[in-house]
Amino acid sequence: MEKKSNRKCIVHPWNVDGYVELSYGYKRNLIDYLLAKYKNAKLVAEHLNLPEYWLDNFKRNTKIHTKDIYKIASLTNDVGIVKEIVQFNDDKGSSSIPFRGKFPIRYTPLWHFLFCLAVGDGNISKGNKRTFVWYQKPEGQKRTVELLNNLNFDYKPYLYMTKKGLTIPQLIRKVGSFITGLDSSYQIKNNMVQASSKLGQDYELALLAAFFIDEAGMSRSKLNSEVTLHQEGNLKFLEKVGELLTKFNVKWSKNKKGGDWCIRIKCEGVFELSKLFDSLKKYNISLLHREEIFYKKVGMASKTINRIPLRSETSSIRKYLLNEFENKDVGLNEIRCLFKPGMTVHSRARRLVYTMKKKRQLKPIGLAKYVVRGALI
Image (cartoon, rainbow, N blue to C red; front, side):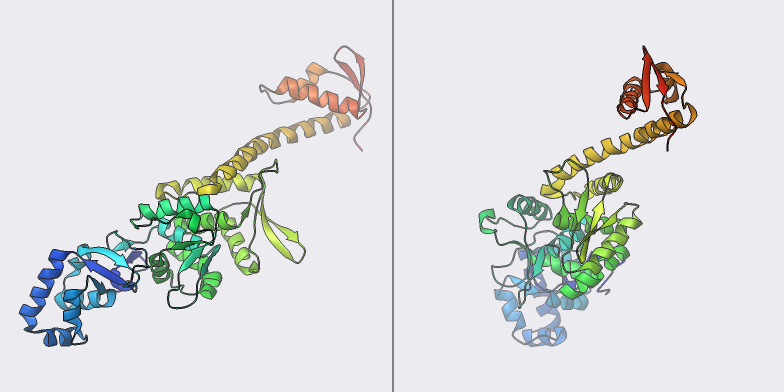
C-alpha cells in the first residue's frame, strides 16, 4: 500500500498522526471479523503487532490511532475503511479541532493557502502540541474560520477570545508537512517557495496570496497604487518571493530601507498581480480582509496604466513642435491633428498649449494662433 503520493497530492489518514472515529456499524462488524478470523484478542494483537490489551480498548473507546488504521487496512486489505471514518482528531482529548470531512484528503491549493497563511504571521508553538497560531486582525480571523468550516472543520471559536492569535487546526500543519516535506520553522523559511513550485503553478500563487495577506503594505492614506512586501529578518525568503514574482511577469523593484529592503510593486505589477489572484477564486481563495483595499489599488493602477501612453504621446508632440516649428506659426487645429484620434484629443491639445504658454514656449499671435519661441534644449 502506497503511503505517500506527492504527485497526486493525496493524503490518507495513516499519513498523519492523530486519532479517527469509525462509524458505529463498521466498527462493530470489524471487531466481529477480527475475532472470527483470529479466534481471540491475543491472536488479533499478535497479527496487528499491537499490545494484547488493544482489542479491549478498541471496544470501549470511540477513537483509534491512525497508525492502527493502517495496520488494519493492510491486514484486511480493506482500503474502503477510509470511507467509514466519521471524524479526525489531533489527540484523544477535547482540545483538538475535529475534522468531519472524508478521507483521503486531496491537498488542493486552498489547503496550501491555509498552510502558508498559518506559517506567515503564524507561529509553530513548541512542545508536544506544536499548534499553529495565526496573528491577524479579527476580521481576517473571521474569514479564515469560514474557510476552515468550508473544509468541514467543526470550528466555532469566540473571536473576542482570539486576540492573541487564531489557532489553526493541527491537521492543516500535518497534511501540509506531509505533502511538502517541511516540518519545522527552519525548513519552511528556507524551502517553502521551492516546495510550492514542485506542486504546481496554482500552489505557487496560493503561497503568494498568503504572503501578500501577511506582509503587504497598502496604506489607505496614500493616493497611489504602489504596494510593498516586507519580510523582517529574512531577506533570503523575500528574495525568493521576488524571483517568484518575476516568474509570473509581475514587475517589481527593491525599495531600500537602510540596511534592509522591501519589494516595491508599481502599477503594472499590481495590475498583473490582480489577474493572478483572480485565477485563484475557483479554489475559494481570496485576500480575505485585505481584498477591498487591494482592489482599490488595482483601480488606481488601471487608470495610471491608461494614462501612461497618453502622457508619452503628449511629450513627443511637445518635443516635435519645439524642434520642427522654431520661430514658426502654428494653430490649435494643427496641434490637434498631431494627436492620435480619440475622445480626449481636444482637451489634451488645449492642455498642451496651456502648459507650453506657461513655460513661454508658445506666444499667442491671434485667435488660436501661436508662434513657437525656440527649439528644445
